[in-house]
Length: 224
Image 1 (cartoon, rainbow, N blue to C red):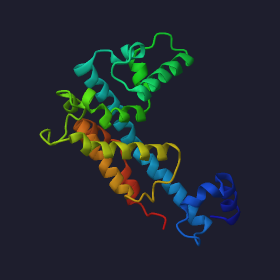
Image 2 (image 1 turned 90 degrees about the vertical axis):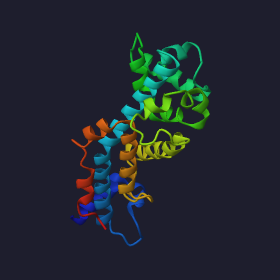
Image 3 (image 1 turned 60 degrees about the vertical axis):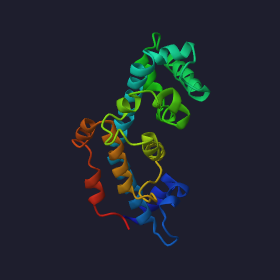
Image 4 (image 1 turned 60 degrees about the horizontal axis):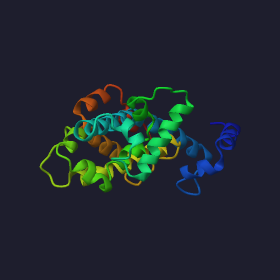
């Protein structure tokens, strides 16, 4: 890459952002820019997995609450707080207001499900919701229908760390931050996210494999 082009790109992307791609002080602008581009490729290759995971998770949690606790719970929860704690209830009210601001006149539950953030749904998987949700008979089985061992004690504690990890990695990708130097190893990240999706639905995992090119991207020559 020509020196002038490198300098222009460094100015464009900002030295501050590119500093996280410097593994040591002697790294050249050329190698840093190659890592930046590679990070974009890897992030892009993880998007299908994260997208299918997020949609599958939120729909399964909603399905479980509808089947086990209350039909049309999101719409009812807006007017009377029965299930959600204050933080999540406020997020629901904010989601309703955002939909109104977007011009939605007749808000339905599907609108709310899509508007609520991934963080909202993952917070429903914390221990503070165990009694209200996860200890109800059949609830875990609806959400994680293909979990390998339903007789296992405290299954949620096995799943929740991956959910937290998923949220953090997803946020890093969506905020265009570096992931290729993840301390856990980016391939291990991918493996754990696949495991999580396999707990929700083996069918979704097979569907993902039609489009996911993560392994091909990782197999390419990496910038040193």
